[in-house]
Image (cartoon, rainbow, N blue to C red; front, side, top):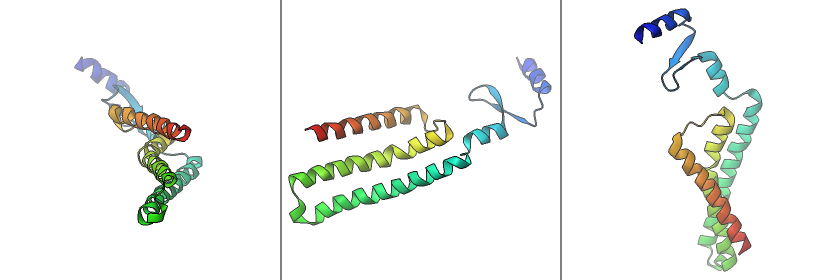
Length: 135
């Protein structure tokens, strides 16, 4: 086995290739970085996601603070709005960053457990928002 690996390694130009133990294959590091690093047309996408992230977090926090501080705003309708703001806050906080990284790099970096957790949060949050809007 070791002998076959050394023969295979000698056939390749080892200085240009790295061996990946994770998927048992050879890859060119330049191609790998080009695949992972965002392309120029993706930078506006990243920028607008960051702006939306900041505005969403701050805006939803302000809605919750406004209803909490003003006793006259503590009505059933405003509690419903606070509920939607909290749901939106959680979606922005837990689902947006991994989705942006996934869209930009076309690779999931966060492991199998986080993949299942993020997908569960995305589906359950959307289901709960729709359920609240209908009732």
